[in-house]
Image (cartoon, rainbow, N blue to C red; front, side, top):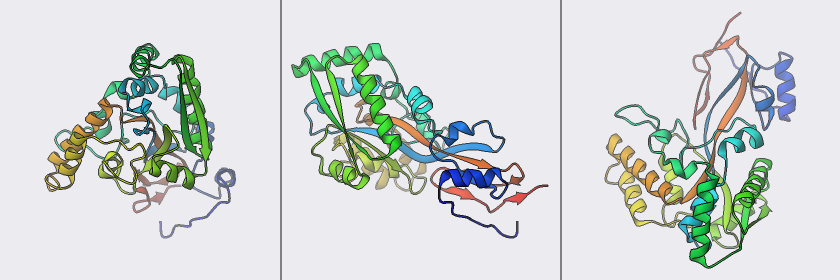
Amino acid sequence: MSSVKFQVAKSPETALSLYQSGKLDNIVLAGQQAAQMKKDKGYLSYPSGETDYLAYNFRSKAMRNLNIRKAISLAINRESLTQNVLKNGAKAPYGLAPEEISKNPSNGKDFAKDSSVKESVAYNPTLAKKYWAKGMKQLGLTKLNLKLVCYDVDSFKNSAEYIQANTKKYLKGINIQIDVQPKVQAITTMQKKTGYDLGFTNWIASYPDLNEFFQLLNTNNVNNAGNYSNATYDKLYSNANVKDVTSTQKRYDDFKQANQVAMKQQAIAALNQGQIARLNKPSLQGVTYAAAQGISLKDAYRTK
């Protein structure tokens, strides 16, 4: 290809119309267009380098209770959330970091799967009820009212409502109030660590490196939405960025251990890992995609 022409469409619907009429060769699908166009010959999906998650505000007494945190997480069916609620191509997560950010230098395994703690992202209502009963007894409560802050974005609001419904279905005495705020306001609220018990938020990597995600749980990091703090985690995080920074394997192992520490403690509830859904005309070949790196047209070419 000797040249590439980019066009800015006013809306996802306009972009799709231009693609279907042959005026565009490659477009990003937005929202539930991904589900609608999944059978198109040009449909493709790849990781966006994003994790959406529920931050527990550790300044809230109830959220400091591990059994309560585990119960809330286990009451959420992430497969149903992604496939039946979001319908935007997102996938169920494995932990804090999404897929295709890093691979184990020794065996090539993807970090997300290699470091996963199954229970931290599992759906198990029976176990959720057991943890809930234990946690509520420890707190001396029969009812628990929680405020969930989320951005004024449809996907976030829909996810928050799904969490609200699922937890109420399985956890006796819980009542989650959803507080929808403009994105900047919601982020500010979470940075101040006051006025909420749960925060629905996300992180999109600017480049493919594990530090992009693990900074989020480091003590006193401005982006640590839930104010999580753990000395072992902080030590592993520091090792990855200082002592072991020149060793690819040791750094990987530090982050792997840090993920397992955080996920065993249910430091957050990872809810979904983002995917970018696109339509690419079959005649346009050689286009490559990568998480947190976007699209590359370096080797692109057109066939007849």
